[in-house]
Amino acid sequence: MNRGLSDNLGHLRLFLALSDMPSLTAVAARAGLSQPAVTQALSVLEQRAGGPLFERRARGVLTARGRLLGGRIGRAFAVLDPALDDLGPRVRLIARAAQLRALCAVVAAGSFALAARTLGLRAPSLQRAVATLEAEAGRRLFTRTPNGLHPSRAAETLAHAARLAFAELAQAEAELAELDGSTHGLIRVGALPLARAAWLPRALAAFRQRRPGRAVAVIEGPYAELLAALQRGEIDVLLGALRDPVPVADVVQEVVFHDRLALVAAPGHPALSAPWSGMAALMGADWVVPRSGAPGRTQFEALFAQAGLAPPMGVVEAGSALILRELVVEAGYLGCISGAQVAADLRRGHLIRLPIGADLPARPIGITTRTAWVPTAVQADLLACLHAAAPDDAKATGAVVPDG
Figure 1 (cartoon, rainbow, N blue to C red):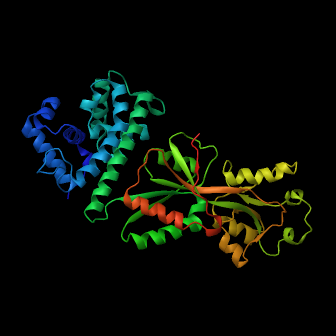
Figure 2: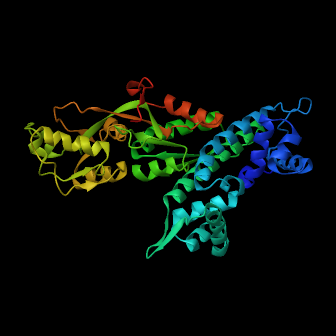
Figure 3: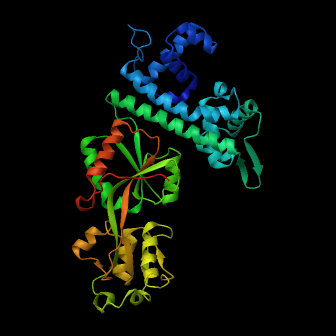
C-alpha cells in the first residue's frame, strides 16, 4: 500500500468534489479536466488509500475507507484554504504540496540553504517553489535581512495552516493503516518533567499492552517550546502542569489529577531538626527549584512573599528530579519540586518533606491539545491510558480549564 496522501492536493480536492457531487461529468467540467483524467486521479488516490473509496454499486456512496478519508481531508482543507485564499483568488488552484512544504521549511529555517538541507533538496528548487507562490499572490513572502529571510505575516499564516493540514493528513494515513490492521503512524507526546516521572511511564506500559507494536515518541523540553510544537501540529498532546489562564487561544486543557509541591531535604539536614521558626529560617539555605515562570516556581516564591520575605537568590533552576536528588542528598541543598515527581523517594525515606506548617495549594496536571484536534482510535486509547494511570488519590473529575 502506497500512502503519501498529501503528495497531490489536486487529487484530494477531486475526491471531495465527487463526494459532494457524484457526477464525473460535472466534477470534470468544474475542474477543467476530462472524465478519464478524473477517473485516473481517483484510481491513484484509491491505490494510496489502500482500497475503494466509493461503493461501485451506488455512485457517490462512500465506503468506510472513503468516509474516514473524507472527514480528514475536509478538516485539512478547512484549515488550509482560508490562508491560501488570503494570498489571492487563484492560489488555492495552483498551490502544490511541494510548494507548501518548501514554504514551511523556509519560514522555520530563515534561509533557503538551511531549509534545503532539512528537506534534502537543492536551494534553487525551494526558491522556485516560493517564487511560484509569490507570483500568483502578487507580493513578496520574504524580506532579506542581515539575519536571514524574514517571512511576511501572510507567509507565517500560510505555513502554520499548511503544517496543521499536513498533520491532519498524517492522521488520515494512520487511521487507514489501522483499518488495514497495520501499525503505521507515530504518536508524538510532549512531556514536561512531572509527566515523565511516573504518570506517563505507567500510561505507556498500559498502552503497549493494549496496542502492542504502536510507536510512541516522547519529546521533552521547556513548556514554551512544547506548546509551540503542539500548535504547529508537530506533537499530538502535551502532558504536565496546566497554566491558568491558558496562554494561547487555540489549545484546550483537561485536568487529569492534582499535585502539590514538596519542599524537601535529605535525612539529617539541620532544617528538619531545628524548631520551626517560619520561612525566614530557610532563607540562608542553598535551593534547587523549578525554572523561572513555571507554576511550581510561582508557588515557591509565594510562600516567602506571604511571610513578607523576598525569595532566596542564587538558586539552582532545574526541572529534573535526578538533578534535585543529587544536590539535596549529596550537597545538602533544600529542594522544591512536584510531590508526584519524588513520591518514590519520599516513600522510601531518601527525601523528607520540610515541616513548613503550610498546606501548599494543589496544581492541576493534565493534557493539553489543539482545540480542533480529533484523535485517532489509537490516540484515544493512549488518552484513556493516561486517565487510568493518574494517581488514584489525586484524580480530577475531568474538568476542562477554559481557554481564555
